[in-house]
Length: 327
Ligand code: SF4
Image 1 (cartoon, rainbow, N blue to C red):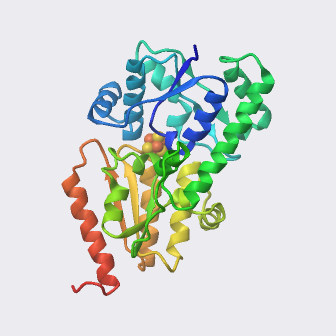
Image 2: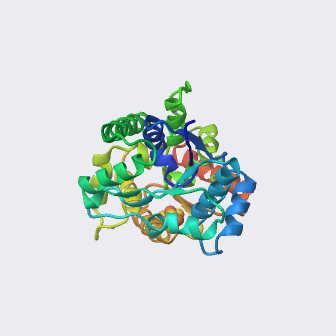
């Protein structure tokens, strides 16, 4: 019988799920995801973590608990250190398997694959073989599984660049037919980590709310790499957090863009890196003064009514600037 590998639907799930799924399935495992985020998952995560922990990590813990209750053989909690040379991820990712082991009791074995591209291909190949051998003792099959998983990731990223959200791209890769991102008459850039805006429960359906108000939503992942690099190249000092740098790079790119109507920055309560990137972005947009900018912080207590009011006011402002409504 194939072994069940649980993948929590939180944090980098939104960046890498198709790749991870392909890898484990090619090794003969059955991949099981945690349930969609709901009140119980958040409550379980909040009870498990200290108050100061950021909301996405609390939510991730809730997903781990959900998988434990589902009865899987392993839970995949990678230690993602770097996804490119010279830059790192936030420290929460570096210590995630340790956090999980210390905060959640009675867990099945954790697969804590180290993902550290800074240390080069040989290091990654050793890690891939170490994890692959938990399932099969065939080096060439493990290498094939890795190659296939990289291919799936490239396909996933192409779908996102076509204008689908990460969540939609995951659904498309699972066989769902979805319509292309409808082109609303307002173009709004959402600057955020995918796990803050792709999780419908955490973000209170932010992307769909904006679409329903007539917006065409662009996320950081939809922008071509060279544009992000161009934007990031304008930073006075390079940022060593990969994803924070991507958000800032996208923000710098949009500030010079002629065809964006507004920018919304979304961050999670308790996030150290976001408090810096958001402040830098806000200063830039205020100084420039041409593109309306709004920041939203999500936490476990954010209410839908308050969010809707702010979004409606922002959309009205954008329409007024376009001369579509009177003051
Ligand atoms: S970047 Fe912020 S939100 Fe993401 S894991 Fe780190 S502290 Fe949490």
